[in-house]
Length: 306
Image (cartoon, rainbow, N blue to C red; front, side):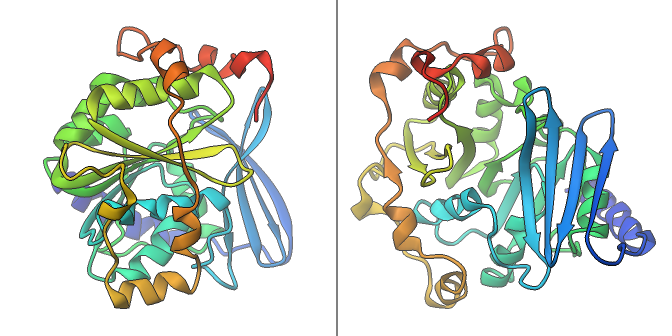
């Protein structure tokens, strides 16, 4: 954790030096070497969006009047991880976004460590200056490449969440069999790997095929009407986590906090079947073959996004 500790100091220093937030509503644009970003405030709602050739993609949103509210629908579905590891003490999240996830999670699990990893320093800066994120020793941010952090850090994690985007795309080196094996090696024996996927293109099937090549058990949850699919994968074969009767139960205190902002039964109902035929025919993504943008542009059956 030496890297995380050193960057925590940088994070806190940045927070202390952050500029005052503009009064009233605003729209701001920033271009970095990694992203083209738009941040917009309307009332108490602040949205962080990434601009690309395909337009703007919503990366995160926070209601400053209710910071624990999960404004972006798929962030609710990330809590499906509780079915597989209901007592997470150490969580790594690759991709900070607007830091929407850690706020409710740390309220429910105040003793847990939530280590975020973010490549773009501007994203972190905007989180602090515009989206009200206040990093602590329990919510440090490492400003580095996600794969490099996984390779160098030797901590064993209960959850590893992959939710990293660059200009609307997930960087190809975070989509490969080799990277997923590195993540599996950093999980505790009963840990869970959680990945935010997008349905509607050939990349979705390749994503699932590649995750299944590493993890013997994969369960997916489809965020209603949003196109996001959350894949939860574990590296053990028993018990059978494809059967809901084997899913874990969250302890009462944490469950009560979580219940103020989301309904875990509704997330259970988002469970979806893995499209076996399409996944079997898909291309495996490796360090030598990971044409993410090409596959993401290929619509499923040429019918466009669902």
